[in-house]
Length: 119
Image 1: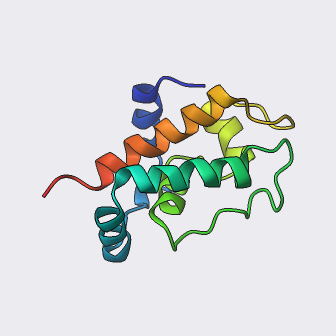
Image 2: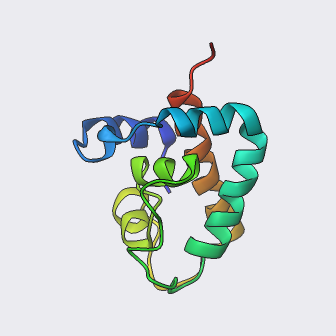
């Protein structure tokens, strides 16, 4: 796992990763549901779609839109096990431990906070 400041500096230099933004619908959803609720969704998505040693449809399991967490996952390279290995140094082929799942959720939270500045 990487230091978050180092990670976000690297993500900012990636043309692909830095293109992701929350659309108006996602921002409204985040504001109406609240960050804590959206983060509970993030924990659920990470557990069900990413944490297995060999997730179903790995590399294609995270949609590009439809929920603020999905956008955050692509923006932070937390979308599949290959990206987790490349960007976060979390090896493929084994289940994510609780600490790694917490780390992924912390990455997503940081991006969501940056993506939705206070009014």
